[in-house]
Every structure is written in C-alpha cells, then in structure tokens.
Amino acid sequence: MSETLTPVRPGKLIINGEAVDAASGKTYETYNPATESLITTVAEAGVEDVDRAVRAARAAFESGPWPKMKPAERGRILHKLGDLILQHADEIAHLETIDNGKPIFESRYIDIAMVSDCFHYFSGWATKLTGETNNVSPAFFTYTLREPLGVVGAIIPWNFPMIMVGWKAAPALAAGNCVVLKPAAETPLSAIRIGELAIEAGLPPGVFNVIPGRGSVAGEALVKHSMVDKISFTGSTEVGQHIMRTAADTVKKLTLELGGKSPNIVFADADLDAALRGAMNGIFYGKGEVCAAGSRLLVEQSIYDDFVAKLADAAKKRVPADPLHPKTRLGSLVNEKQMKSVLGYIEAGKAEGATVVAGGERQTVNGKGYFVQATVLAGVRNEMKVAQEEIFGPVLSVIPFSDLDDAVRQANDVFYGLASGVWTKDVKKAHIVARRLQAGTVYVNTYNYFDPAMPFGGYKGSGFGRDLGAACLSEYTQLKSVWLNLE
Ligand code: NAD
Image 1 (cartoon, rainbow, N blue to C red):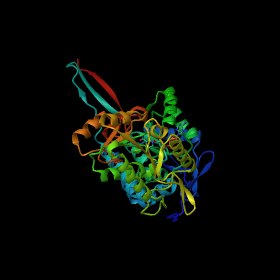
Image 2: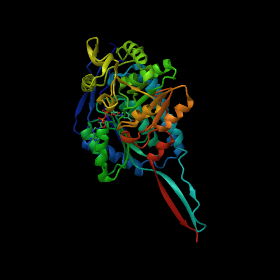
Image 3: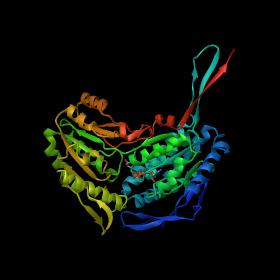
Image 4: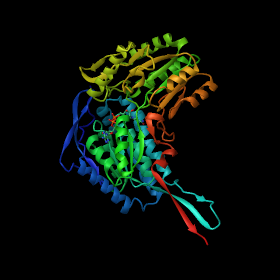
C-alpha cells in the first residue's frame, strides 16, 4: 500500500497566527486506519490552549485589523485561501485520505473542490451583507445593521474533516467573525494544514485558530468559554444534545448539524438503472460515514426482489481497497471502534430477521485496516434497529413499501430528518413526495450532491440551523435596530 507523498510533519495548534505546541507539551498519535500505522503526532489542546485561542480570537475581533478591514479586502483574503487550497490539493487530499481512510478519488476530486468552493463562494458574500431601512414613521429614521457575532467556536466531526472547515469557517469569516475550530481528534491533519494556509493567505493573527484535541476536554472548554458567542457544531446527536445543555449556561447561539437515517425512495416507475447507481452512491460514498447517507432504501413492493438482486450484484463489485489507489471507491472506516460498531449493527440486523444479501463482514487489505464490505440487508422492516439508528458505515437497509402514502409514512417514521431521495419519472409524484418528506434536503433522481449555494441542515432530531447557502449567513450575524429621532 502506497503510504506517504512526503513524511507528514507533527501537527501543531494554530493560535494567534502561529503554529505552536500545547501549553502542557502534550501530544497524541494519529493513525492511518487503512494500514493501522502511525502517521504523526499532533499537539493536543487542553483547557489552557482553548483559552489562549479564544482570547486571541476575541482580541482579533475587538481590536485587530480584521474588523477595520473593508469587506472587499476580507473577501480577497478568503478567496486567496480558496486558491491556496487548490494549489495544495494533492497534499491536503493525501493527508485526508491517510487520516480518515476515504478513497483518494473522493478527497482529491470531491472534498477539495467543495472546501475551495466554500472559500470562493463565501468570499463573495463579504461585500453583500446589508441591513435595511424600515418604514416606521416620518418622525424616525430607522434602519438595521447586520453585524458579526464575535467569536465562533466550530466543532467538527471526523467524516468530512476538510469539507467541514469550509462549511463552518468560510461563512463565519466572510461575515466578519473570528473562529476557533476544533477538528475531531481522529482527523486533525487537513484542518491544521488549512490553518497554516490561512496565515499564508493573509488572515490576521487570531482570526482563524485550529485546536485539535479531545471533545471532552477541548470541545467542552470551547462550549463553556464565556468569550465564545456561538457554537457551530456538526457531529452526533448525543454530543449535540450535550452541547445544547452546556451552552445554556452562557446563552450561546447554536447551530447543530446532527445525525441522519435518510430514506431514499425508489418507485417502480423510476429509471431503475439510475436509481441503482443513486442507491449505491447514496450509501457507499464516503464508506457510508456520511450524515446524509441514503441508508434506508425504500423500494416499491412490485420491483423489490429484482431491485434487491441488482443491489446485491452491484455491492459485491464495490470491493474495499487501498484508499490511496485512484480507482478505489470504498475505503477503510475511520478506526477500529467505528468498524466494530458497524459490524455490531449488521449482527443486530440479522438477529431481527434481516438477510445479508451482500457483504456483511470485515475485510483487510494487505492484512491490515478497518474495512467493512459493502453490505446490503434485505427484508428490513422500518421498526428494526438497522432502520431506525444511524449505523454510519457501508450498510444499506432495504425496506419494501406498497404505495406513495406508505412510502412517505415510512420515510418520515424516524427520529431524524436530514436528507431524503425520490426516484421516479413522474414529475408530479416527485414534487408531492418532496413536499411531504420531513427532511432538510430532498434529492429527486439524484443523491448526495452538495454545493456552497445550497443550504444544508436538519429537520427533527437532525438538528437546527443551516450550513451553506445565503441562509447560513444569518447564523453568523445578528441584527441591530437603530432608531433616530427626526423631531
Ligand atoms: P461526535 O459527536 O463524536 O464528535 C463531533 C465533534 O464533537 C468532535 O470534534 C468531537 O471531538 C467533539 N466533541 C465530543 N464530545 C464533546 C463535548 N462533550 N463537548 C464538545 N465537543 C465534543 O461525532 P463524530 O463521531 O465525530 O461524527 C459522526 C457524527 O457526525 C454522525 O452522527 C454524523 O451523522 C454526524 N454528522 C452530521 C453532519 C450534518 O451536517 N448533519 C455532517 C457530518 C457528520
């Protein structure tokens, strides 16, 4: 298995425009899940480092050059960061793949494009954030100012480490905030590299800080810190609920992007070849460690058996392989714990009566790695654990439905509401179902597309607030109403 482009430098904290060690001197090791080998060590942020980073961000927000800069200049710097990410695309994609286990094809051609697009797209918004004048009375001149919040704490998961930097930091910075970003302990390398590039792009010291560390220490300290105005979190529902409780003490604003168990509905009148490809990419892209994964495939009863057979054939061809090989389309899960959890769900599915028609087992590549085969579970009922809980791995639960009402009922009968898919040639049916689905995103005859211009976020247990799109800018700004007496 090809290992490294160049030796990976030990990761540092990025605080106040410098790469620094943790105050305690503590480091931890980060591993390549596909080879089980050590990549490098990373400085581990403790409470003191979080405090340093937050104070640096606060100072940058209160008195640094950032708030005095013209929005056009802020936009130029963010645009340059997008350019630098593209210039270092091979290096960052490589870091992402060895740290996370995802195929290099995805890191290099999907994730890099998304994160650089985020900086480019939101750089344009820096000059377009406006308040309004309000028609209250001839006696007053009234207007609103749209202002940044201050210090934004961004806490991100391990499944899309570099993309999440773009989703969180780009709009927050474009709106004039300063950011302290805590990557997941498992996958800190791409965020640290982007933090270094942010300095090169010209972001003033303290404006963008990166503090890898454990959630229970660094994450917790960030949420509790009184100088942090907002937490933008993407991760598990359980941690999101905990953050919500903790943030209540300091009345922090919150965006929570949580888990999903998204229904992908295939009607008998769909283009079934396209639906098959959509179902496969819906679950196996990103090894299924994707919040929006189409993990519940609802298939119309009349085509159920044939479609399951086709899915099984296709899944058997999606063989886990070396993530660094350009043709690989299924990589290693992020670590052993995640692999065991996914295998546990497959066992739970079997125990409840589901049939494994493809995959179902761990696999190694060259004797190593936490790979799980592309797995298809047939005969799943919507009330089963494998239909209700987020597995976060390459496991597809296939559920039959009888008609449109039944499809919508089952699709919505779940705690989550992140994404959903509909496959049909009937335009009217597609729009009716799109309106009835309780999900933040509905894909029609496609799946797993993301763009900085399209808002993304959850209904129900999948959280609240939106990443991306013009909509997310209101998550990083607040309105001030100004009344001027004209009499
Ligand atoms: P996680 O909740 O375990 O961790 C997410 C982040 O929170 C990490 O940086 C972690 O260190 C930190 N954290 C953990 N405990 C904390 C605490 N007490 N206080 C503050 N921070 C803490 O999630 P994960 O396992 O890294 O990621 C997988 C989850 O993320 C899945 O549930 C997935 O659906 C979700 N996710 C959601 C979206 C979305 O947009 N809705 C996108 C990607 C992933």
